[in-house]
Length: 245
Image (spheres, rainbow, N blue to C red):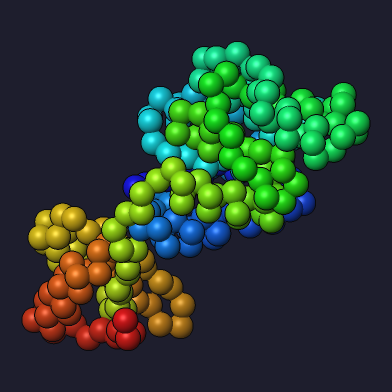
């Protein structure tokens, strides 16, 4: 399956904090036979968040969202998710119980607001501080803290999705001294022959100019396409360099 990832927070866009979610989700999803298909980094802007969430919910694809589900005034994600889903924000009894159990008297009046969730949302357990995340319409809303995100995201994949096929692989080689334009006919030929794979081309400029060509997809098909790529380059009289798989 292809998953989207939304990372929410002005601090990421301003550079006050480094993103630590993209690489984690890329590896986690690949390990379960899925793929990170797209990423959006969004500000703490309620109108923008609601609009983007409405759009991605309408697409019906699975999405992880990190950040903005706390109780401070700049945490808008819970309300924006409810508006995007077209449901009211309501007090979730089990989430309230967990928060009160964790914080006691200090849960009120502020922390307990984290139990106000979109109507119909289901909970995602948080083993770090017991304050749950939530899911609605294939969107899984998690805190922004990586130490909480990691076990919560693993729980989602292990409990709500079936693992996919073996993780995709990439094979590539470098063709020095040529331009992408000179390789265009070859790329079009190979893309037509291997419709189930992604062919990629990355021109590099430096002390030595070269074009990196390769395929992304299931291992068996990638190996076959990669062999054909090498054969065609040899036929064209073009030298190339390749790494070991």
